[in-house]
Length: 130
Image 1 (cartoon, rainbow, N blue to C red):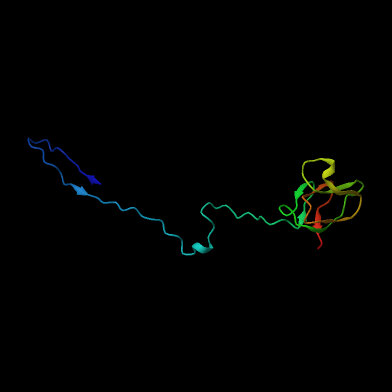
Image 2 (image 1 turned 60 degrees about the vertical axis):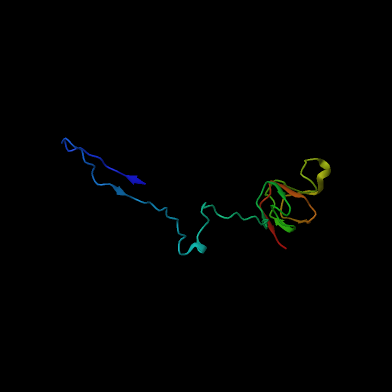
């Protein structure tokens, strides 16, 4: 890059002022000393993609993706029915239901690895017990 300044002192002959050459060198960012311990540049936390050992409440949960196969227990629902269903598919068709039930108190179910999904409605959270 070349920067020049020309001025006039009001005299008959204009003489150029001093010319100065400036060279800029791009600087590369240096990682912090503890770069291995720092978060990614996006600042986004890592997402936990492992299936959960607890089923939080109402919904349809995919086995192997959202929840793990195994035996679960819920305290059911006081004075109301707690509905659950093991599903072979998520199309919503009646023939997708492998097994289902209603519980007023505690319920224990076994979700197999071959089940596609588990549906629960109006139940307290399901805790994995094995």
